[in-house]
Length: 379
Image 1 (cartoon, rainbow, N blue to C red):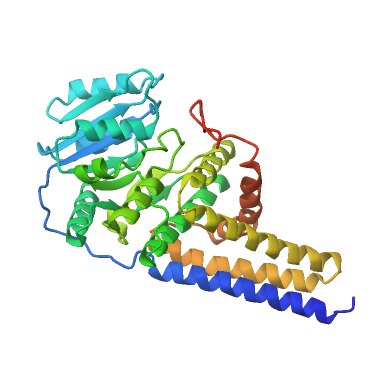
Image 2 (image 1 turned 45 degrees about the vertical axis):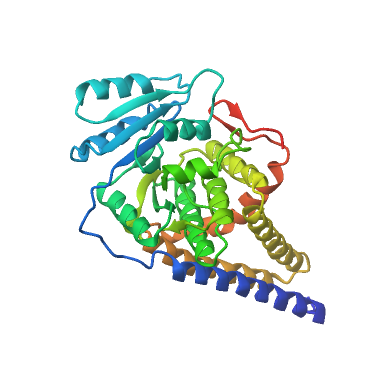
């Protein structure tokens, strides 16, 4: 097959795009978890921990065991907010309360007609009587030293809202490995955006803030019915107000959480993630998603173009160039987060991710996201 000047031009453009893509992610990996300090001297600061939950019988016992493992701290209060659970979560919590009366733990039930995690956080904040509030999810494994680490880092930075890290755990299936890879990369990307003064996303499973700050900002006003987005809306309100925002870049602030085990659940999660960004006033996250989709469209369009013309060597070169690039920077990101993923899984994720992202990007316009029987609002 004859190679034309147009083919060479297309190849050069593709190489330039991949180089830009690699350079961007190299910068992300270089800035990720660069702080490894460990604060040994803890300050006993009163904290109220809020944990909204709905139908978490498979996860809540692990969280309760974590709470029990922390030496009794009368200045630490735990409020678990029940978002109309229909399983045995409440029974598990009540039994734990009865067996551990010294732990300052209470249950708050959302009233009829009030639903959702954001409403649960609102209710928990109003019930709290401490200056600092720590938001967690029912499926995290918390570590006392990491709580102190984030608390001290936040006070030192003079911030009023802070996000700790997350370490994703799971089994050996590709579905789980894929999530560990992609979620950790998103975690690194969120920190990179913050360091470049354009914060977009954090993780509400490890979120610390001042009560008065939350009440003043009203971060979920106007978006309380949106599925998810607790982090992006709070971040946006904070950044637009006074920029009293902090992202810990230290793995010693991270909590552990398990990834999903089924592709069906992952699909629904990603649909929710894609749809919630429509409600950001700045559209920062949505713009990043669109740019990534455009890159993948051009990338795979170029590969297909060369395959149709019989220039298989060009297609293979572009495929290998991106795959090797992904292997390099993803290994850096994963190792800094103490994640051990086989290089074969990284290669598989590199090949599948573009199609998965394109699929989510298209289907989000035709399917409403859902979570535990609740549907996302029509936008």
